[in-house]
Length: 203
Image 1 (cartoon, helix red, strand yellow):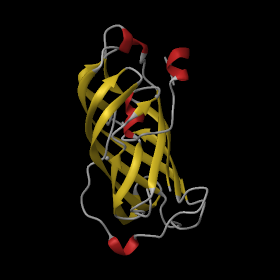
Image 2 (cartoon, helix red, strand yellow):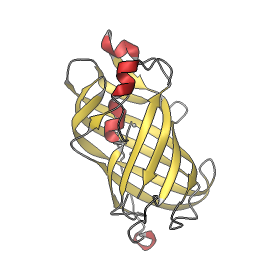
Image 3 (tube, rainbow, N blue to C red):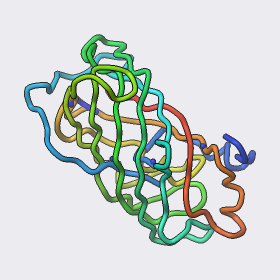
Image 4 (tube, rainbow, N blue to C red):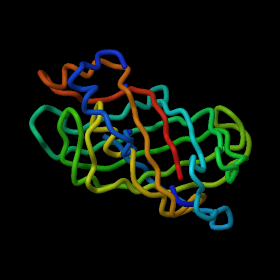
């Protein structure tokens, strides 16, 4: 699940109106961290963001909810893996990062469109080349905003917060994850997982 630093088929109009900025790890979601590279920490980002990446749930790495999310608020746990690709640094402070992988884990009081009381952390491992190849640039620990928010799914509520260690520590992060699986069932039979794509911005 650094400097100052969780889907579209089946999304209904009411769900779309609920979208907000990425909370995320996402995925529902969040990130679990391991080591940090203090030497890679950078100063505050300028306008435009320090790093922007495309986001997609990893193959076989859907974000799962336990118990399933429904229209009735309930405390759920969320776990999953998100791939970050096509990373670019608008302000030039992270020119060597090209891709990453976010491992998420957390909990929150969730409904079909969002979550509050979000708790958890996530770890992003950054790579110097596309598709998570090349050398490891460092690992960033992310902590979502406890207040959560509304979005396409509860995942968005885990995709905004702050990077607390590693590259870009102290920077905020935000993102969105648009479902690619059918999320309409959330309002009828419940939603046990999310597959999706979107974007993540740090700084």
